[in-house]
Image (tube, rainbow, N blue to C red; front, side, top):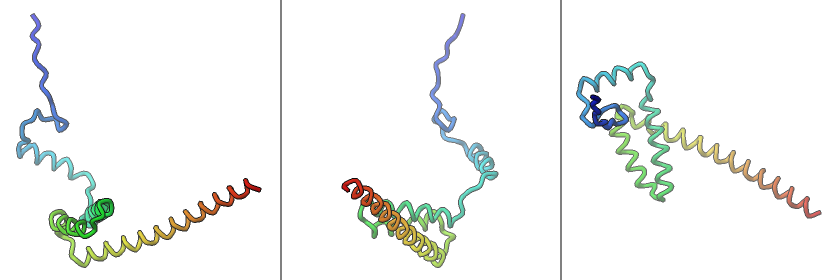
Length: 122
């Protein structure tokens, strides 16, 4: 006689819905130790870009700045205000330079395209 057991659902984390115990959680953290993680500076850059893009899309840059402040306090407490200001100014400077470059390339592309079209008319 064959006994068929019902299949239990298993979540992506391998659990069957029960809370992970403190022991399992500490084992998981030990496995992560060998992997490289982001520095506080890198984490802040990720948050800065994400919040700025979301703020631009929602046309709410002031709200984005408040969210960024909250994220900084919650996720990257070790960064000083001086470091934060340095990161923001460096990224803004880089974005301006990239914007100038891309605008110039777009103009060149449009000029080439216009030239090609006008040559067709001759």
